[in-house]
Amino acid sequence: MIRFDSDYMEGAHPEVLQALIDTNLCQTVGYGADPYTERACELIRRECDAPQARVQLLVGGTQTNATVIDGLLARHQGVLAAECGHINVHEAGAIEASGHKVLALPHKHGKVAAEDVERYITEFYADETYPHMVAPGMLYISHPTEYGTIYSLAELEALSQVCHSHDIPLYIDGARMGYGLAAEGADVTLRDVARLADVFYIGGTKVGALMGEAVVVTNPKLLSNLFPLVKLHGALLAKGRLLGVQFEALLRDGLYYRLGVHAVELALRIREAFRAKGYEVVVDSPTNQQFFRLPNEVFDRLSQRVSMELWGPRGESHSTVRVVTSWATTPEAVDELIGLL
Image: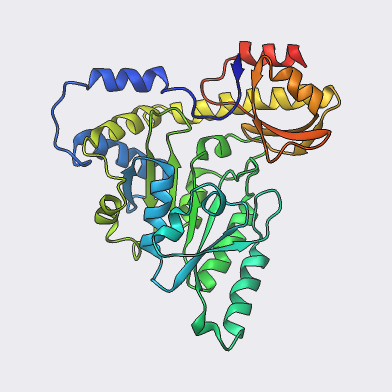
């Protein structure tokens, strides 16, 4: 069986594992107050061209989103997000559990438009009864989105402008940031993300690390109490240097970027092979997530040898499937998949 279910099925890149082995018996203080984490955070600031940014390493994506969103919002506020956004669909109510409502926006293949954000906020405050309602206190987007799509630089600039004109922060979920930066046709860099977002995170769990996400706070007015919030939300690793070691290994010589390029190149090979066979490409994704509409008999046949995810319920005759590559996907596995088509 070859597996294309998700991008976090393997452990960690060998260079990351080797760094953990090499430092395994080193003794350091805990909770991220160690030289490895310090160096990793400095590397992140350098890559972002944000020397004054605060960087905090957390364990996983759901904890990261819940922690950051809880820290950014007042008690009466909610978070704007695409209807299909991860925090609205796949985090088991983690945001609502901290007392905040997800305010769903329309989307196009996972992306929200600046005009829809503007419209929601403007219409909210035009309603005389707005003090009785949950106020839009921030915008959450992911890059790439749940559909593997990416924001252009112009789209990010427009979203940032709308948010800042209404004095709400823009927060970017970067669980798959490495694949977004490497995407076909991408014109957004990490420095652009740091310039336009108030808070974002660089995902490690899905891009070569055993676990870990790096939150970057570029707006100095926000999240001054981030550290205790991380602990409150159960996202603080006592052996914090394990996160620092991994991010240092990923960013020290560009490994993070190379892993993104590797996964995207293989995903695009898969996309073109499915297209050449006449199968419908549901979303024109330029990243490591690809979506196809297959006859059920084709899906069932492939499922004998290939593991991939049904994207939504099975249809009567055709179903949409998601095929995902990762930093660890091999060309041989892709060749085998293509040969089975």
